[in-house]
Image (cartoon, rainbow, N blue to C red; front, side, top):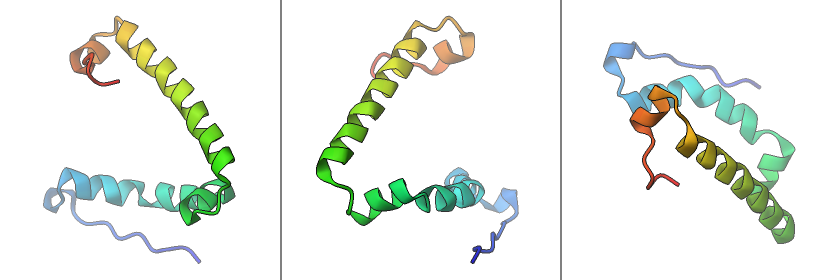
Length: 84
């Protein structure tokens, strides 16, 4: 059963409200993926969860290194060395 999406007028919403509203379906869909449901329910074996965290860590290190080295003006405008 699909959850109906309610949309408030943008001018009445805070940025956080808008973010929640516009990404709600994506969050619901993602949480329904069996792997993610297993994590959220606490039934993921600890070793498997630790392995996943290790994978995510490697990914984030690579992304952070790329952002720190970027010469893109927009990236440089927001990236700070304290972000990683």
